[in-house]
Length: 249
Image 1 (tube, rainbow, N blue to C red):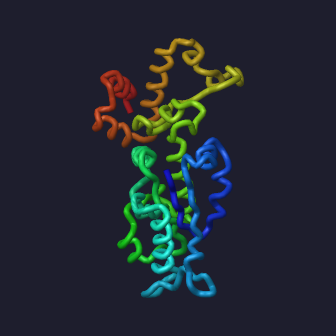
Image 2: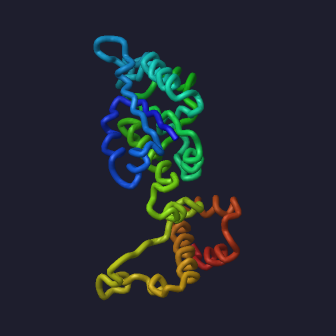
Image 3: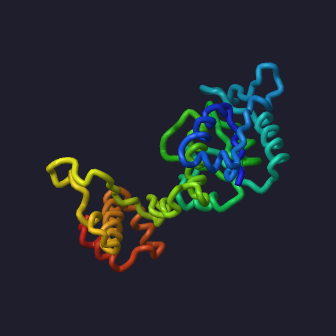
């Protein structure tokens, strides 16, 4: 699996590639990340990759020609199979479903915009997919690219110490995750300071039932849209539906 990152700030990626559990995948080449400095593909002495927008307005627009030269270099080295992904608030929200699809694929070319954005002609010619982290604006596409790299890499075999870890993540089954607890068993005298007794029982079926109940309760309270989506997908059992009905939300 290979990711080629087109960016003006490759130095933002270096610490990420050498930290945390995902670093094993990067350092071994299981997930190969190539960083491409877009200024290397500018042709003037000033390494200019942006200019003022036609029609006026604030900010600068990233130019087509340096981007196309960079993309040609990537395709010459990596081939044409990987999709070109552009990060923008106008894109489709990044979901765990899409992350799983990317994790099973050959990789992608990640385009990190800056300034006021990228000349639309480059987007229209070359971009295969546009992705957003949410309804807010960042200074560039580097943070969304890092988020995607992390989300995809942790799904690769052997990256997590426990292969089942990502199967219990939020959104892995369409719902939010349940609460988790560790030592000590009690932090104080209040009921909320104690680990729920069911988790100390050693009864695996009861633990699984409690976790499912918590998932449903938290998701119904915080993201009812996910409950609707799970129901439409046939992912809720009769027991799930009975519990949801009992919540009376």
